[in-house]
Image 1: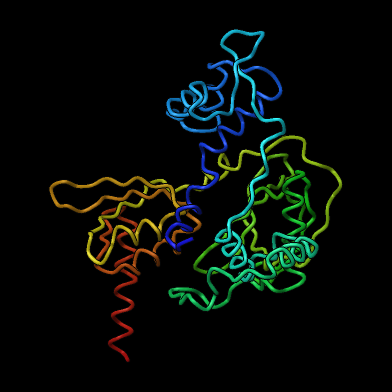
Image 2: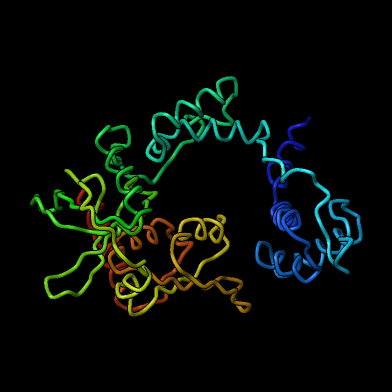
Length: 335
């Protein structure tokens, strides 16, 4: 099999259509399904237009997977004697998975037993790429200690508690060097690509009964343990994060020079944003809504683009850009 063909299979094998047909066949194995049933499943597990392509192929026997039911008119049953066969991995998918295993963050999400099973299953597979094949730039050097035994234990305890809505009693070292202990409900993990750090959004209750969402650097956690009292309700994290959103969004004008638009979309992919093309200038206007706690990080990202990006507003952000540029110019003059 050629390399191009293998890449094609990696992107097309087990696609949305495959999963939709699998769902229909599973239902049709349990009981007869009508055309309307199939259309509903296609819309639920696929796209709005999926039913237009899938259902006619099934009912018209282009894909000979269904047979008409003998007792119910306009109903169909699965032709398969057994359930839908399990999805096997292609060689390219195995190579990609083997490459992921070399990432130091990979072990944070798996137990030793699971890692050993993966290692054995992929023992004779060459990785698709190696970490050394990439040269990363614009990164901080003090990444989280992913290989630390304690750090890994903390991450897995957090992931387990999140799935069971189990509050944790946490002690951690604050940025000011103080040890703080409190009980939090872990709600969401966030990873910063630039600084290489995991952060935990955790819900806390004040003494007056009101709730707040705190942000904790996982690497600063000293110890944690479960409280044994599961939280009764799910938490709307976005509701709390909206309180921290900026009052005025950042507005950028992005040129197409040096792949400016592509680079910006990749750089700002973690932010909620709107992009529109300005027909009169050929540039793009990008409106970014961001958490005010990350304003400094966003400012540094914007400055890294140089003349490719122009800040249109708000005025407070423009002043910060001007101050940063002025300080950089002063430093160069004194060198």
